[in-house]
Structure formats: structure tokens, C-alpha cells
Image (cartoon, rainbow, N blue to C red; front, side, top):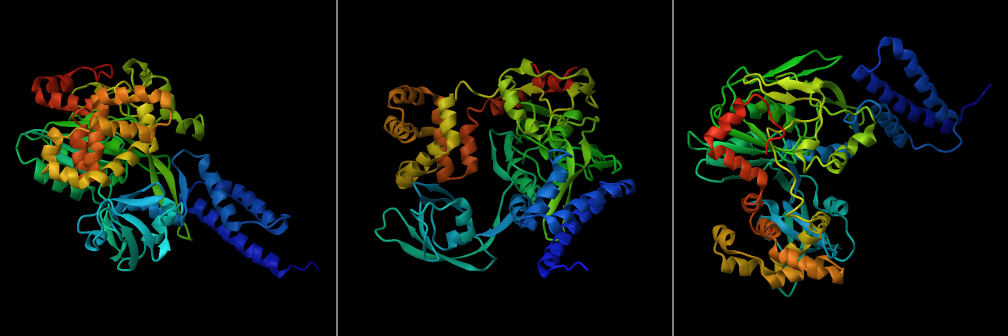
Amino acid sequence: MQTVSLQTKFKNKKMNKILLYIFLLFLNTSIFAQADQQQIYKFNQVLDAVAGSYADSVNEEKLTEDAIKSVLKDLDPHSLYFSKDEIEELNRGLIGSFVGVGISYDIIQDTVMILSVVKNGPSEKAGIKPGDRIITVENETIAGTGITDDKLRELLTGKKDTKVRISVKRRGLKKHFSTVITRAKIPVKSITAAYNINDHVSYIKLNRFSATTLDEFKAATDTLMTKKNAELILDLRYNSGGYLYAAVRLLENFFNKNTLVLYTDGVRQKRKDYFTHKTGKFRNNDLVVLINESSASAAEIVSGAVQDLDRGIVIGRRSYGKGLVQKPIYLVDGSMIRLTVAKYYTPSGRNIQKPYNKGIEDYNEDLMHRFEHGEYTNKDSIKLNDSLKFKTLNNNRLVYGGGGIMPDIFIPADTVHYPSFYRKQLNSGKINEFIHLYVEKNRNVIFQDFKNFENFFSDFELSDEEIENLINYVYEDEIKKKDYLNEFEHNKYIKTQLKALIANDIWDNTEYYKILNNEDQAVLKAVEVLNNKKEYAEILQSKYTEDTRN
């Protein structure tokens, strides 16, 4: 009779857990019909053989995750697996809060510099200020040790009401000082900027659709849009999506009750219609929505509904093109899969999901392909099939599906005013590093010279000496430094962006966008259209949505 060792029994017990995970995955998602049970059995045979006969030891957890990922990989680019730890990070921005100490920071020259503290948050209450540098956390030295973001997050985060002691170095003080911070719930805002551009145009920058978006939007509009004829620029550029219900409820602000703004449909999920449940406060106010190639999912739901129902004007560049609906399915160990269960459609019937039949790698490189083909700068480079044509529901304008939302007014990416050598260093973080160091050194001087943001906005300009210091800090090529310096000194767009970065460090995101939007072509075009009632009406009444319009 064959004997089985305890080690083999232990391995088989763990493998049974793997089989259970995979079986539950198949069962919960109904991927396989009854006729396909033989395929599940075949798959189980392979895993069972690995557990009982494979020559080397097996990492059961990794094998489980790899098997699940392999199943999902061949479905579509947005059916994904997340470990328990990844879920916590994933949900941080969506639930609208997390437990922490309430600071933003950057690691500069191997030292953690605090850039901002949350107002009335735990760090502010503990006496921490922007510009402070963290030296130790719980007596563990972190300055000069090559600490990573992940390690620092691990040291600073914890359960609510627990305490963490840090020591910091502050400019002007000879000695470090220590303080104890009590961790608390920290809000994560989905609206990063909100202000009035003029006496009738408000601007709101929304970077995600989260659990708190509707409350934030109400608070912002209650403050800003007090006049009956108030108009809104809703900036959804770089908004990658979020909760579908938050997008639908946001749309309720702009439509009459019982307006269809979205529907979903799938092979195994019957059509579900999403209607507005109330009459919107701003249903008669002029509206412009800004989008670009990084506006996705829920951002496309909003811009698509606004366009299909001729409710407002969409300005910018073609959006990302994500028209698949994912359902979260939690597994027995707290991990999760997001499984595509349906497609979503704009009111006219458009599914704006871009093709993914060439594989995930090609799909993920789509935005780079668009750039290489000149789509970001040339309105005529976008070619779409006639089969993707749709008409808006009220004014019968031509719109397109199958690859993102096409704007009513095209705004090219600005590659002229922001040369590549500047954009490269901005993306690398080196320019931000210099700005952080500059603000740390000059914060008090700026407050003395400019009593408030309005004075700073109108009168501040980075000196030629500081621009030269920036060039020396960021660039190493001595031969090209002279050319770079000349470009920086005479390029008002670069100087405006540097000024905005300084304002962001001293005040907040709203002040950053107040400065930056002064040179932002999409925002300027939006203001122009809203200031011209005739042009606004003509665009919405035109026979075609001209993606060739400038």
C-alpha cells in the first residue's frame, strides 16, 4: 500500500485552498457554464499534479495569484486581481479618507521634506509646519538612509488614535525638536481646485469620482455659483474615473428629473438604465467640460452624457476610451478581483471602449501611439470608421463611439511653449525639487514682500538669478545650459508654471490653478465660449460636432 508523508498532506491541504480560490472565482463570476465543468476539472488536475509531484517546493500563494491573473489576463485589460494590501491603497482615494498623520512630503537629497500639512489635522496640531525635515521616526533615523516612500508610509501610518513620535529639523532653529502625532482620519479630496474666474464663470477641477465627490461639489457650488446666470467649467482632464454612482449623481445637477444619462448592458447582465432622480439646480446654467487623453471611465460617462444630450460643450482632446463596467468580487482571503460584467453606453447608444483585440501590451501603449501619430497636436490625424457615427439626441449633431469621447472643440497639447528639455525635467521631479528648496528658503521673505496671494499673483516673478540657480540644479550639460537659461528667461509659459508651483507650495492647489489657467489654452477657450452666448449656442445647434473645429 502506498504511504503519504505528512509533508505531502500539508502541501495537498494548501493546494486545496488554491483550488477553492479558483473554484470560487469561477462560481461567483459564472464564467463557465455547466458544460465547461470538464475544463475546470482539467485545470484542477494540473494543480493537483503540481502539489503532489513537482520536484521543487512551490510557493502556494504566488501560484494562486498567478493562476487567477492568468485567467483574467485573457479576458480584457480591465479585469484585474488585487491582493489585500493593494485593495487598501486602491480604496484610499475612492472612500475619501485614510488614517494617517496629515502631511504631504517629498524626499529631497535623501531627506524627507514636509511640503504641506492638513489644516486642523494631526500634524498641524502637533506643531509641524511646511518646510520641516523629518530626521527620526520612533527614534529610528531616516535622514540620509535612502528611505523609500513605502518604508516611510509604513512608519507613519497606523490605526486611528495611535501615536507616533518624530523629530524634525526646522530652518532657523539650531536644534532638532521632537513631537508626538496622534494618527487620525485624513480627508482625501476629489476636488483639487475651485474658484471664480470672473463674476459669472466658475472653475472646478475634479480629479476622481469618490464617495465624497457629491458633498464636495455641493460645498464648492454653494460658495461659487450664487448668481442665477452662473456658468461652470468642469475640468475632468487627468480624471481616471472612480465610482459610477458618483458620476451619475453629479450629472443630476445639470438635467431635469428622469433623464437617461447612462445604461449598462452585458451578455450575462441585462440592460440597466440610469436616470436622474431629481431636477438639477444647474439644469439651465451654461456648462463646459474639459477632457483629454487621460480622462477615463466615470469622466467619460459625464462628458458623454453632456455631449449626447446637447447639455454643454466638451473641449479638449479625445478621451481615454474605457467603456467597460467592473464588478468587485471579494475572495476568501480578503483579496479581490474586478471583473468586467458589462459595457456602459452613453444616452445615444455609444460604447466608447477602445479596441483591445491586439493584446494588453498594445492596449497599454495606445496613448503613446496617439502621440506618435500626431493626434495630440493635429486635429486631422484622428480617423474613425463611419460605423462609429451617432447623433446627439436633441440637436442631431454628429458624435463618435468606439474609442473615447471626441470633443466639440479640439485643443492641441502645448509642445511649443513647453519644450521637451523642460517637460523631461518637470516629469522627473527635479524642477519640483528645486521649487521645494526655494520655498523652504524664501517662505518668510515671500510672506513679507507679498501680504496675500492676490499681491503675489499680480507682482511676483522669479528673478533671473534664481532661474540660473534652477538651471544649475536641474541640468548637468554645461554646453547647453546657456541655451536653456535663455529659454527659461524669455518663455512666459515656463515662468508662469514655475510661479504656479511656488504658489502651490505656499498656499494650495486652487492658487496653483489660478496662476496656471491664465495660460491654459483649454481654459481660455472655455471662458471665451462662455463669454460669447452666440458662439455657445451655435456650437450646440450645429449639424455636426466638428472634431476639426479650433
